[in-house]
Amino acid sequence: MAKMNGDNQVHDAEINVEGVVPERQRAAGEEIGWYLQLLSTVTRELQADIWVRRVVVAKNFNATVSELSSVHKAYGIAYKAQRRAVRAIGKIIEHIENERISFSLVFDGEVFGSWEERGKAFRFEKFLHELLRTVLDSVRFERVGAENFYQDEKTVEGVCLSLALVSRNEYIVDRIVDRLCPNILIDDDHQPVQLAKLYLAEGVDFRATLSELMEKMPDFVSQNIQDFKLWHMTIDSLWPHMCEFVDELLTVFAHYAAAYDRQEGWLQILADISRTPAYRSFLSGHLEAIHSEWQRWFDEPKSDEARSLEAMGNEIRGIFRRCGLTLANVSSGIYVRVDFV
Image (tube, rainbow, N blue to C red; front, side):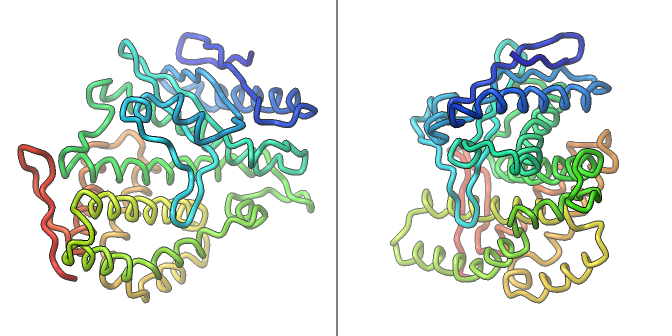
């Protein structure tokens, strides 16, 4: 067992490394215990009770997430890690009971199962990223309570705020990891490692992934609209497809911005983005405004969260509008009017 401190309480986090090769399971358990202790140190000054129930390196990632997630179990939906341009290799699962929030963290044994010594920097970034998300969720839970923790996704505002919250949290967590990396990681030349350099060493290229998504976006939008107009797709399929695409694009942009937006070449990166057809047709103005809110929240985390999320939600609604979707709340949920684009 590894222990971590919450506000005034110590919780035992179960560590399950069944997805790690047998000869490396002890090392894996010890390293995960160190991550939990690091999280305890990082959050010592926060007025929140951080409770991690379990950390699992799973043999079957999708099946384990589906089993532990009350949402997936309730709706009979199987979790799928693969998305269009990226694949999830770690997942945080919230448990809300008796006005308290706790977390299970699941990692993919296909990725982490060998637990080689040379992969420590990679694991540090991935494990710490998910652990730090428990901090943001715990602080938010303290602010809004169980009743308001999840957005009502039967309303336009709820969907847009949910998308805003996901991308904002990815940005904030990556910025924190970027701040911690140089204090803990060094490269072969004994130089501190920033997050951008760590991504390059891992072969993670969010610039290429973002470019791929933006290149696909015009055809994706027009094809989905056309399929709907020709009765090849229902609104019950079109709306989730559009939400998933915008969610993925904003998440990738959040990772990219968190690693690079303090670097000298950031203005050139933005200039390159602004020249793409996807930016001109769907994203101009909205992407900058959302990014500004991410930066403001990182610099002033105790500012008006409701205002910030509402501002980002309005920008996301604007993206949908420019994709040809006009949204309205009705008694049965969300009404989506589809226009040609």
